[in-house]
Length: 254
Image 1 (cartoon, rainbow, N blue to C red):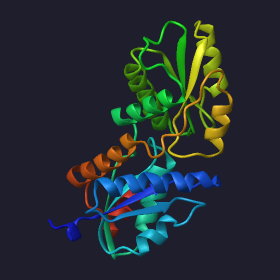
Image 2: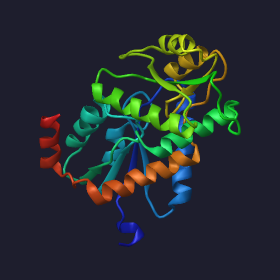
Image 3: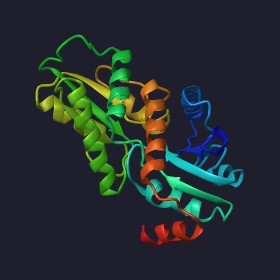
C-alpha cells in the first residue's frame, strides 16, 4: 500500500463554544501528522465548531477511518457518528475506530497532566492523597463503565492512589460528591484529573472544584497522539469496511 492508498484518518471532535477547544484539537492533530506525515489527517466536529463532520466527509473519496476523539462509549459514538456516515452518500467507505478510552495511553496522559499541575511523581502518594477523575458524563451506562475502567488504570499508574470517577452531567457521582467521599476516607490532598479531550464548560467547572490541584485537559499530550494512531491502526485490522448499506444496517442496530 502506497501512502496515497492509505485511508484518510478523520478525527471526530465534539465541538465547543470555548475557543480553546478548537486550538487544542488542532494541536493534537498536528502531533498526529508529525508522527505520520504519510497520512491524510482530517478533522470533523459533531456540533458547534467548523468543519462539521458531514462537510469533512463530503470532501473525501475512497476510504477513511473515523477516529472519535471521545473518551468512551455513548450517544455520539453509537448514534451520531454512524448516522452521519450513513447520510454521507456512496462516495466513501469507512471503518469506525473505537473511542479513545479506556486505554493505558489515556492513563499515561492523565498522569502527565497531573504531574504538570504539581503532583509529586517521585513520592509514594501517601495515605492522604486521592484523585477525582472528572468526566463529562452520559446517560449511557457503558460510558460509565469505560470511565470507571480509566479510573482504575490511572490508580494503577499512580501506584495505588484511589481515583474516583465523577461527572459534570448525566451521571453520578458529581465532582463535589466524589470529593466528599474521598474526604470521608481521610484523603485530604485531592487532585482533579481532567478527563476531557479539550477545554470547555464542563472542564472549567470541574477544575474550579479542586481543593488542591487541577490538571489540564488531555489535549495534545504526546500519549494522545499515539493513541489516535493506535485506534486508526486497530480499525484497519479489526473494524469492518462500512459501505452505504452496512452503515444503514449498523444504524438500525444502535
